[in-house]
Image (cartoon, rainbow, N blue to C red; front, side, top):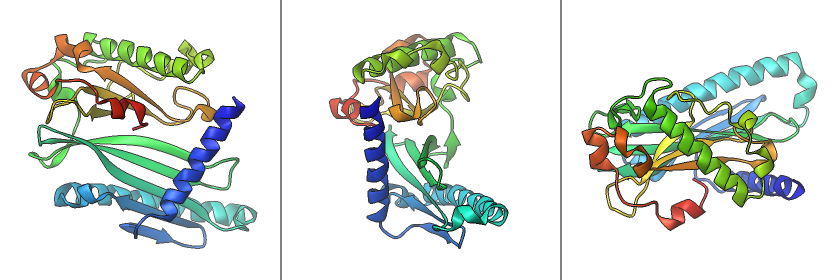
Length: 257
């Protein structure tokens, strides 16, 4: 686990270095209590509707954390003697499928002068045609809590997580206790994106993104579970059948997404 702790520390350092090298933020709040930034990647900026949506959400996040930091400084000013909190949120496009469905990764970095910085990951699925956020429901015939589709997803997610833990030599945490938060419910199974594919314009399946602590100790860092579209083939709608196909590109499987 020492090696894992070092890896996570290096990862946090890389995040800080990357942020330091970032271009000018697209939104920022800077006070005595906090410096918080929001960054949109260039592909998001190229889509005015998507950019506006992400920026509106990002600004709410800035205001919320600025208020919390101010309250914390007022209550315990000694914790701010070395400076304010340091927060950053980055929106990045992960995939574009059928020239319509855009998967966005939302990564948060938070340093409140605790034992270590924290991070979080969430996702957005954007419909370019409808110009709004959607869920993966249109791709499946049913997505009822505890229904066959969601049960199949959970089974495939856990199988993927177990394989990843074996690869990282962390199988001791591949237990029901660590996987209990992965529930057969669209809101609780994990933050999902459409994975890229070897077939242009299609998706090879679903990737579920888990921040530190979600399915393993902090030292293990983030996890990404991949569910190939073939595992969900019996549950696809006509639109699901249209957009899914091909295989996950090798590079996508090797790089954390």
